[in-house]
Length: 117
Image (tube, helix red, strand yellow):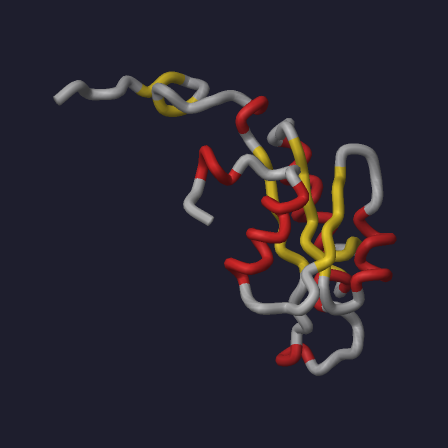
Protein backbone atom coordinates (compact mmCIF):
# COMPACT_ATOMS: atom_id res chain seq x y z
CA UNK A 1 0.00 0.00 0.00
CA UNK A 2 1.31 3.40 -0.99
CA UNK A 3 1.25 6.17 1.60
CA UNK A 4 0.15 9.67 0.58
CA UNK A 5 2.37 12.53 1.57
CA UNK A 6 0.95 15.69 3.09
CA UNK A 7 2.17 19.11 2.06
CA UNK A 8 1.69 22.59 3.47
CA UNK A 9 -1.23 22.94 1.05
CA UNK A 10 -3.01 19.87 2.39
CA UNK A 11 -2.99 16.13 1.84
CA UNK A 12 -1.55 14.71 -1.33
CA UNK A 13 -4.10 14.43 -4.08
CA UNK A 14 -6.24 17.23 -2.66
CA UNK A 15 -7.28 19.82 -5.21
CA UNK A 16 -6.73 23.50 -4.82
CA UNK A 17 -9.41 26.15 -4.64
CA UNK A 18 -10.46 25.24 -8.19
CA UNK A 19 -11.80 21.99 -6.78
CA UNK A 20 -13.42 23.51 -3.70
CA UNK A 21 -17.14 24.27 -3.80
CA UNK A 22 -18.82 25.62 -0.66
CA UNK A 23 -22.50 24.96 0.03
CA UNK A 24 -24.01 26.91 2.93
CA UNK A 25 -27.22 25.39 4.27
CA UNK A 26 -29.34 28.34 5.40
CA UNK A 27 -32.90 27.05 4.96
CA UNK A 28 -33.78 26.21 8.57
CA UNK A 29 -36.56 27.84 10.54
CA UNK A 30 -34.75 28.08 13.86
CA UNK A 31 -37.84 26.98 15.77
CA UNK A 32 -35.95 26.62 19.06
CA UNK A 33 -34.83 30.25 18.78
CA UNK A 34 -38.46 31.34 19.24
CA UNK A 35 -38.17 34.16 16.73
CA UNK A 36 -39.90 34.97 13.47
CA UNK A 37 -36.53 36.08 12.06
CA UNK A 38 -34.64 33.41 10.08
CA UNK A 39 -31.95 32.02 12.37
CA UNK A 40 -29.09 32.91 10.01
CA UNK A 41 -30.08 36.59 10.26
CA UNK A 42 -29.66 36.78 14.04
CA UNK A 43 -26.56 38.75 14.90
CA UNK A 44 -23.32 37.92 16.68
CA UNK A 45 -20.68 40.60 17.20
CA UNK A 46 -22.68 43.05 15.09
CA UNK A 47 -23.09 40.89 11.98
CA UNK A 48 -25.71 38.38 10.85
CA UNK A 49 -24.59 34.80 11.54
CA UNK A 50 -24.67 34.03 7.81
CA UNK A 51 -22.14 36.81 7.16
CA UNK A 52 -19.58 35.14 9.42
CA UNK A 53 -20.03 31.89 7.49
CA UNK A 54 -19.70 33.64 4.12
CA UNK A 55 -16.56 35.49 5.21
CA UNK A 56 -14.95 32.21 6.16
CA UNK A 57 -16.10 30.58 2.92
CA UNK A 58 -14.69 33.45 0.82
CA UNK A 59 -11.37 33.26 2.67
CA UNK A 60 -10.94 29.77 1.21
CA UNK A 61 -11.09 31.21 -2.33
CA UNK A 62 -13.46 28.50 -3.54
CA UNK A 63 -14.55 27.90 -7.12
CA UNK A 64 -18.14 28.55 -6.02
CA UNK A 65 -20.28 29.48 -3.04
CA UNK A 66 -23.91 28.39 -3.05
CA UNK A 67 -26.38 29.31 -0.31
CA UNK A 68 -29.44 27.08 0.05
CA UNK A 69 -32.40 29.20 1.16
CA UNK A 70 -35.72 28.17 2.67
CA UNK A 71 -37.43 29.88 5.59
CA UNK A 72 -37.31 33.65 4.97
CA UNK A 73 -35.70 33.09 1.59
CA UNK A 74 -36.27 36.63 0.38
CA UNK A 75 -34.70 38.31 3.42
CA UNK A 76 -31.82 35.85 3.60
CA UNK A 77 -31.23 36.19 -0.15
CA UNK A 78 -30.86 39.95 0.21
CA UNK A 79 -28.43 39.48 3.11
CA UNK A 80 -26.17 37.10 1.18
CA UNK A 81 -26.24 38.66 -2.27
CA UNK A 82 -22.89 39.63 -3.59
CA UNK A 83 -20.27 38.69 -6.15
CA UNK A 84 -19.58 34.99 -6.38
CA UNK A 85 -22.56 33.88 -4.28
CA UNK A 86 -25.35 31.85 -5.87
CA UNK A 87 -28.62 31.13 -4.14
CA UNK A 88 -31.05 28.28 -4.58
CA UNK A 89 -34.38 27.91 -2.78
CA UNK A 90 -35.15 24.55 -1.20
CA UNK A 91 -38.89 24.06 -1.64
CA UNK A 92 -40.20 22.01 0.01
CA UNK A 93 -37.72 21.64 2.84
CA UNK A 94 -37.02 17.92 3.07
CA UNK A 95 -33.86 17.86 5.18
CA UNK A 96 -30.13 18.35 4.92
CA UNK A 97 -29.47 15.81 2.17
CA UNK A 98 -32.24 17.29 0.06
CA UNK A 99 -30.75 20.78 0.57
CA UNK A 100 -27.37 19.62 -0.71
CA UNK A 101 -29.05 17.96 -3.67
CA UNK A 102 -30.69 21.29 -4.56
CA UNK A 103 -27.26 22.91 -4.82
CA UNK A 104 -26.04 20.06 -7.01
CA UNK A 105 -29.05 20.33 -9.33
CA UNK A 106 -28.31 24.01 -9.90
CA UNK A 107 -24.91 22.97 -11.21
CA UNK A 108 -22.91 25.12 -8.83
CA UNK A 109 -21.69 22.21 -6.77
CA UNK A 110 -19.38 19.50 -8.00
CA UNK A 111 -20.63 16.98 -5.45
CA UNK A 112 -20.10 14.19 -7.95
CA UNK A 113 -16.40 14.39 -7.17
CA UNK A 114 -16.46 15.19 -3.45
CA UNK A 115 -19.44 13.46 -1.88
CA UNK A 116 -22.13 10.93 -2.57
CA UNK A 117 -25.38 12.86 -3.00
